[in-house]
Amino acid sequence: MHVTFDFTHHRILVTGASSGIGREIAQQLISSGAEVFALGRDARALAELGCQVVCLDIANSAALDAALQDLPAMHGLVNCAGISRLEPAVAISADAFDQVMNVNARAAAQVASRVAAKMIEARIAGSIVNVSSQASLVALDDHLGYCASKAALDAITRVQCAEWGRFGIRVNSVNPTVTLTPMAAMAWSDPAKRDPALAAIPLGRFAQPAEVALPVLFLLSDTASMISGVSLPIDGGYTSR
Figure 1 (cartoon, one colour):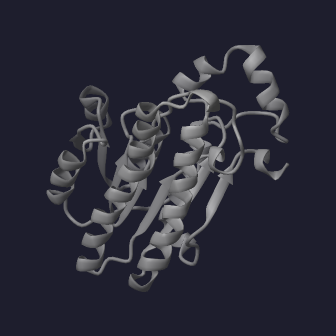
Figure 2 (figure 1 turned 180 degrees about the vertical axis):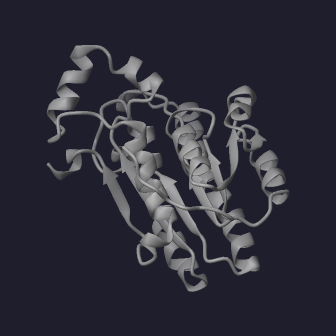
């Protein structure tokens, strides 16, 4: 799949860039000429990207604020850092619930807050994309905390859209289904787990990382100049049922 975007002279921060969808997005942006700032926990993986690196645990609020303060004003942001801790709904633990919410919702809101403040100060009409999940739109067994965190992220997206639109800043979220990063491909290799999930997707397959990354690049680009406040399923029709 080859789609051409031009992000020359655009500074774009990507969180969760060490692996998975975030890494794919960072690579696609670098190939499209962007000056990428890759934030994640794996210093070696970030260094391999060959771009600006911000290595930290995004759950550490104070360290995150300090790092963001040192960055220049951005033209774009992709909030892709996320975690999941699976628990049945009858056995929710405060530790797991809080950890998932802190990373997937609070940290994403914090990053966007600081980035948007600098955009506004620099009078940059930027674009922010929050990487949510189909889990915000449907019930998934053992995913209560994760579903709640992604639903929160969609709500955060709408509030940011409403507050920052007057400054020309667009905010959207994308909501992917299972995306076949190396880790996910292994996790979904068991037919007993994989086949029922595939049967619920009208297109009959899971997403490839580029199939999530390229819509993100579209939303970051001027091609999407009148799109703001949407939560875009990238799920092969899963949430249509």
